Image 1 (cartoon, rainbow, N blue to C red):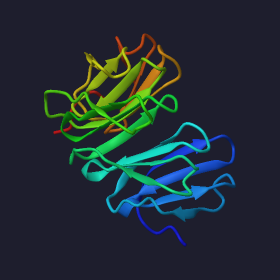
Image 2: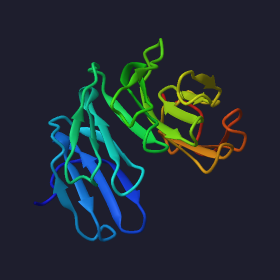
Image 3: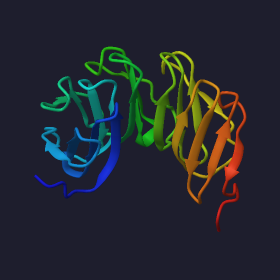
Length: 212
């Protein structure tokens, strides 16, 4: 079947394999370096905004109304995981086959240590849109969100410390080379970098001034 719906997230494993997720529970898979894509049945009807794989078999996707789906066979079959939350989930990242973190609307932060079978609610007390989470290692993770929000955990997502990004603009993405070197991106072409694990950030591109 042709892929026709909006796509919001992509995950790659090795040189050949990839998965993309999007509207109406769409998941598409490539096994030839992206030349062709085939639809997989996710079992979800809601939009899926983010997808992550830790190896060719194990993957997760999250999305609208708290939807979480999981595969253990490379997407040949997907299972909708139960979670008693209706908050939208915008990002998911796993560091191995057990520990992962999902974040989203209204400051929601969910942590799993059993591959997504159960999730612990580690949500923030304030209403913040959290756009992306990245796990650097088994204990360290960063979150980027609205109003220049950057959060860091050093205990596998149990607790979070707010870092001073130096900006008030919304950040949509964050990625790290290692525990010290990270980059965050946001609106108005903003790019930030850190070489000390997020304690201080430098503006690489764009302006910190809010547009009127």
